[in-house]
Image 1 (spheres, one colour):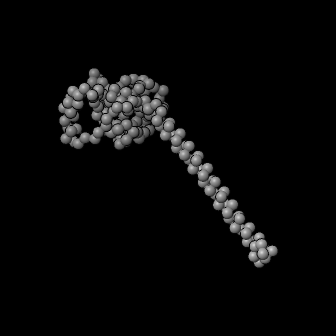
Image 2: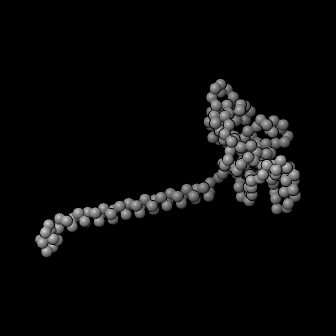
Image 3: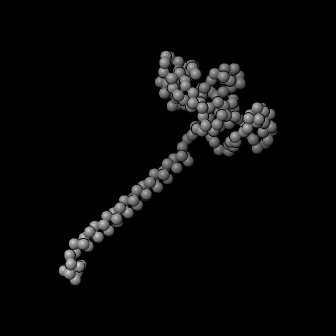
Length: 174
C-alpha cells in the first residue's frame, strides 16, 4: 500500500481524480453552452437577414445633414434629383428604428389613457423612397393639407396598442 500511493494508499489520489473528472465535465458543459450559443446567434442573424421589414432599404443612402443644409433642403433635393443615379430623395428626423422622438399620444375615445410612442417626422416621399408596404391607407400626400401637420402612419403594433381593428378614419390627440 505504501508503494502504490504513499502512506495513505489510493485515498489521496481519489481526491485528485475527482477534481480532474470535475474539470473535464465542466469543460464539456462550457463547450456545449458555447456551441448552443453559436447556433442561436447564427439563427438570429439569419432571421434578421431574411425577415420582411415592410420596407426596402436596399440601395438607400442615408446621410446626416447640418442645420444649414436642412434650411436649404428643397434646393438640395432638386439638385440630387437631377442626378441620373438618384431615383428619389426624402428627409426624416432619423433612420427608421433609430433616433426617434417619443410623444404622448391619446387615441380617440380614450379619456385619460395616453401612450408613449416613438414618432419620426418625415417628408412626403418617405414611404415611396423606402418602399413601405401599407396594410391599410396610404402614405403622405401633398394633395391633403392635413398631411403636413396632423397625419400619422401607424404600424400594426400601435394599432393593436390603441385597441383598434383599423386605424382608418380614427383621430389621435398629441
